[in-house]
Length: 107
Image (tube, rainbow, N blue to C red):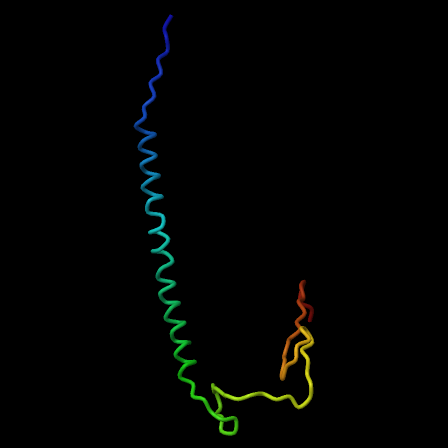
């Protein structure tokens, strides 16, 4: 009667572990390569918006120009006004109520 002899090689298991270590070792670098350029250009977008806001001149309400303008002062109420959603005292409020419709379009 013959005896079966099984030989297990550890070289494939060690090779697989080495590949996994190699891939997971570089995972943070792969993430930075994929996300980095997007964050880079997002920073320029935010910088452009910051400079636009900083370059708006402050003016008086009587001589305010059309377009973007910074006005410095204190708002006063002619009549007491409360926000309908929070019941907070305010000078002005605006809200929009929308209705979502689903289904087919009928003409």
